[in-house]
Each structure stands twice: as structure tokens, then as C-alpha cells.
Length: 250
Image 1 (cartoon, rainbow, N blue to C red):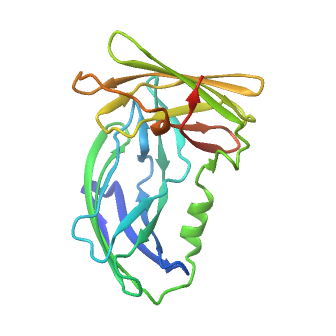
Image 2: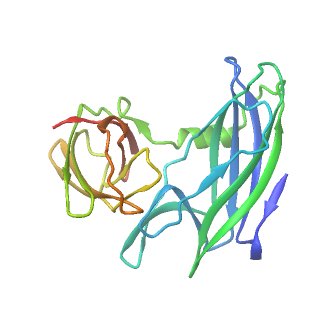
Image 3: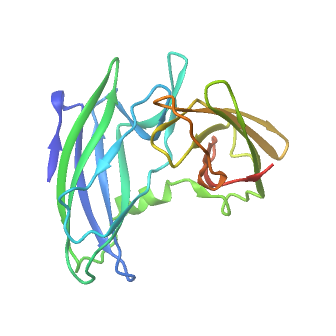
């Protein structure tokens, strides 16, 4: 079933996908944007609106993993944002509560779409994921191939980081030993706490090391802690992107 928003800036649908041999189901959210409009990646940057995907009302769904394809880096009036133009297919890996049964997905998408202005939108879509369907959807398979490399796939050797206090929060700096991802490299730092805001990161390469730094603040100006294991670094280069989880004390 499709959903359509105000002025048709974006349409969305759930692609039913296929059941895998391990019992999990591969599906996807497909969003198509009107000419000139864009929407945002899971960490949208300083100039973007963070997307939220909710699954209330879904049936036979124990767990769902959202796999975001590599985004494009945009410059909006000096602010960096990350997202997608024209179309994006976001794969989902769904674990059913009861194996061998259909899954019913109900999705609510709270997202931002931008052209000259940015507009928050809510889309509601649903689909049945048939247990008997095992044929791979090439559109979803292509989106899975567009996800960032893992640290191992990209040849990351070591990630050493330091966390220090600043007047308003904490500062994070990391030295990532990895081959160049090509061209000018951008970096994004994420935490596992939705109440923390991470500023646009600086990234500078010296030989085999990419140095990344940013500041982290609590949205309600509360004290907080950061776990090195919970930090997530995404490096975006001209040739590929890399998804790195955690870092060592450096």
C-alpha cells in the first residue's frame, strides 16, 4: 500500500521482499521524491531533520533492523547535511515472532523533506510479508549493496579515541587507521543516546590515519556519560563509505 504526502513531494511504499533460509525476512521502505526535493539519512547533519521509523501495530514482528544506504553529503548555507535525492530504498531485516508465518508491517515515517524550505512529513504505509515468498527482489538487493563497508571490509586497523570535558559537554577525537575512502573524506559521529546532539565533525587525513573530532551536548543541558563502545563513526569518501563501531582508549 502506498502513502502520499502534501503536494506530492514524496511517496512511500513497503516492498514485501523475501524470506531467508534462517527465517528472517528482507523487506524495504521505498521513498520517491519529486524533482528537486531531498530527504535525510539516519544522522542528518546540522542542516537536516532526523528520520524516525515506528512500527506500532505490526504483527508477528519480534525485531527489525533498518539498513540505511550510503547517503550523499549536501552543503546547505554552510551547514553539512546527509541524505538522498530522487529515490531511496531502505532495506529492513525483520525477525518474526513465530517462524513460518506471514508478517504484517505497519510503518509510520516521520521524516523531513527539503527543497527551498524544509517540511516535516508523516507517512503511514503497510504491507504483508508472505512467508512463502523466497524470490530475491533486485531493487532491495541493490540497496543492500549500497550500504557502507564494515570496518573489516574497509581494512580499518585501529580506532583510538579520547573523550574530554568542554564547557558545555564533551569533546570526542579519534584517530582511525584506514586506507583512504577516496577524495575529500567526511565523517559523522553518532552515540546510542537520542538525547545527545553531536556537532558536525572535522576530518583530516595524514597518511594512513584519518583524524576525526567533534563536540557532544545534551539537548536539555544535563550531565551525561559517553561509552567508547557505543560511539559510531561513519566515513564517507568519493569511492565508498565505512561504518565503524566503537573505539579504544587513545
